[in-house]
Length: 340
Image (cartoon, rainbow, N blue to C red):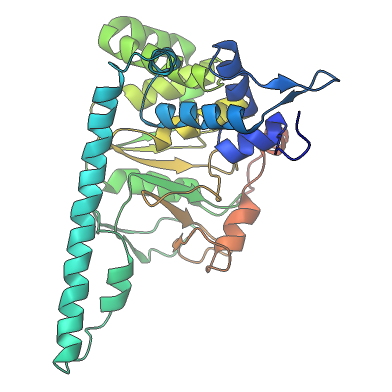
């Protein structure tokens, strides 16, 4: 082993790759990566191992299962074409959005050359992604019925807030207001019999749930009733928007990380998701993408606000303070705020 080569331990490698250490072990079990061992028997990942693992992660991000990844790595590319077709569709949509933004810049430059003043908000709109849907409603208790507007709804929105901030009531009102939306509450964890009955009565749903379950297990999730209940809610057809209360409830850290990765790489056009969470395994502020957004319900019951995902942005520190590791979240499970 060269002393100058950057060899990483599993924790360092997983952080650099953006996957869990359990996912790395699964890749090793499937023969997709082969980390070397130190004299003490510890796994370490050298440049060749990291290059191979990066390829595996990229193929997984395209939507391939580990079995399909293994076939592609072995030279059989038949599973790659449909995955690339979906990726191409996503890229083409981004190109259209970028072309529209370029046209806006061109128009603004033309106006400036003609001596025209910029319209109010023109630069702000220019720096934002293409606008998505908008929803407007009156805020519930503990707010005073203020009018709330949520603009540019992203495919994946996190709702964050400390205990007693009103985030659950906010989420419920949001689900009531959005067209064809469903609020998936914590009761999903309490009726295992009803969940099993739903799966038995709907073979198509059961097939979708089993497919998704296989995916998240490949990413390191541990099968549990909580995970099954969540997948049933996610895969039930009908609603165009889904608001999920405390998505991490009942899930260990590896499962939370696997679910988060799964939701981030959904195909374009899937339903909008609003996730209540206080887990940094669900909302990792270091990897949040352009298709994701954060809504903070402040502790002082100021109106909920959209928070930009970078340090120094208004509300960012409050969001970071609300989030905790799954281990800490497990210790506080069942704790509720007292309402006078």
